[in-house]
Length: 255
Image 1 (cartoon, one colour):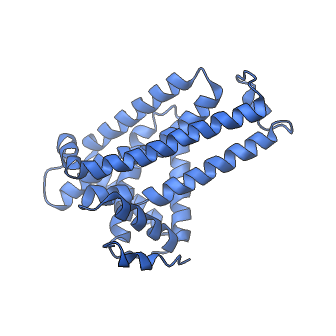
Image 2 (cartoon, helix red, strand yellow):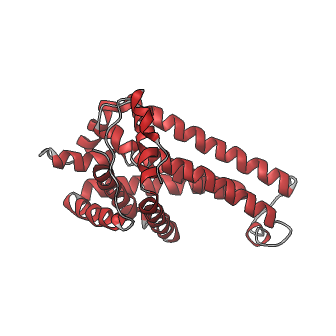
């Protein structure tokens, strides 16, 4: 599906983008694992930090039902930003430099302003999602205190409307975040470009590769679900694996 985004080249200095087949994400995952094994220790550092942050977020939000569910999705909305250093690990190796955790943090700084601006955008979306969730809870539960019974209520006819509305709102925001961050953050870590150029490039890549991106999004969701199902322990490996695979996707799709 072509959304005719090439007209934006008249206003921005846009890189060339490529098209791949629907099964290409499995190649990205394979190459991501290869990169992971080439520098496992610094990669695992990012995985451990992410898992600990995720645990802290869930712990803080555990007292409030709507915050628990919102915290998980909000954490996922911001997680791509945390992979910036992982992208630098592979970039360092590609340039023949020693890949280390400390060096990857130093390399991120070269375009920190634009990466931080991307963080502001993702943070705004995450806060918007928290507000949307709070409003939906207020509308459907009428201020009623809900605990563990929320999960059974959500699937009953009485609260099915809430479940549908909340799920649709989350799906829309997730699609937006996926479209704008699919390759934008590795692009910002790799090139001296502005955030808008990276965002537009990411949206173009997704629009031009919808079958592959649907497969890629499904892989990300399934692996992330495994990470949460293992009480975030699985994220220690899954997060850096997806980070390296995302770098491979960026290098494959943006020229």
